[in-house]
Length: 426
Image (cartoon, rainbow, N blue to C red; front, side):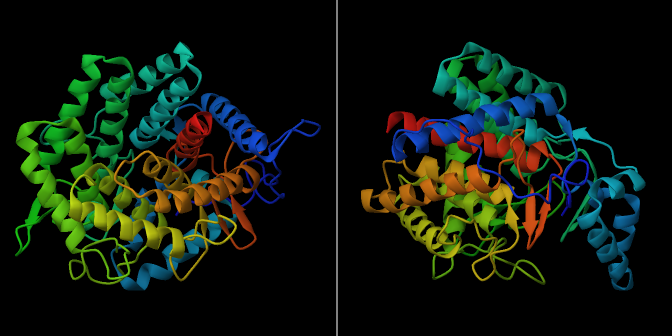
């Protein structure tokens, strides 16, 4: 992971994070505090995102440098790679400058920022928010990734996965899902046909460009990229929910085969490993943000009884095993550290969507509501900097900040906007 040890100039990342409610402000009761603190944090965070711009550093940008990719080729080079990562932990900007890493716009961050502006428009009614969302979406259309079919997006740097190295700008399933979801959100808000057409282009990528693994039961897994045969669970869940939401008749049989694949590979305790068991060598963990992505897909499929049951079991696992009592989003069931911005942001979005899902029982929603409140307080009080930026990660005493639009700023803006919408209705 890309890491930041001391903030922009060496001090901000280590100083204690402060509560973002301004000193001297009057909060008449806890309910008012619950509404005003997230709104104030959201306003600062969106202003900071505008100052930040689309081009930022990214936690994974050092992973695509020639040296790091070279260290991936042999086991004896592994200590060199670990040395780079350890140095990056303490001197993130210095390592990036030494390795020639430049800031770049990412499709995933741009799409999430568009969703944050769309949600903020629903919250405030300010037409300027839609204009800012459209600017992000037009940028996506002007900067597509390399895709053999449809339209898709990736990341602007080379990166290495268990199935091999992936060249920069190669369209991938998760990022394309994020972009497609942003286009659909904008279409739902405005009725603009060009946004729906872009979403349908994403459907073409997911259904025609990716490889399929058909299991013995007839269920189907989609690959991460057009060049691999991976069976990543969150990819299949997210793609199924997105294809169902788009509603193209020809895609519907695939939707339920993907949903079947996800349900078949759920663990007995409700958890989801990263990939289908047996499909990868080495570690195959359950972690916080990939679990959130699977749940996000299952929400869209929950009209189906089997998917609703998987969603219920997965939610209970998520609530009981992936949070500490104070709302800290644990990275893994057996390991809290590192505190991670994407874990927090993904859960804010997904759990807010659960609360509006008609196929989730009220008793479960009550537990979700309590977790959303705790997580929101945690983000506001312990992850937000006074200038509007967010913590990227924290390992023990090391607070890491690199102001990544993709991994921290945009997703947490989107999550807080969804929380504020819920509070407004509440």
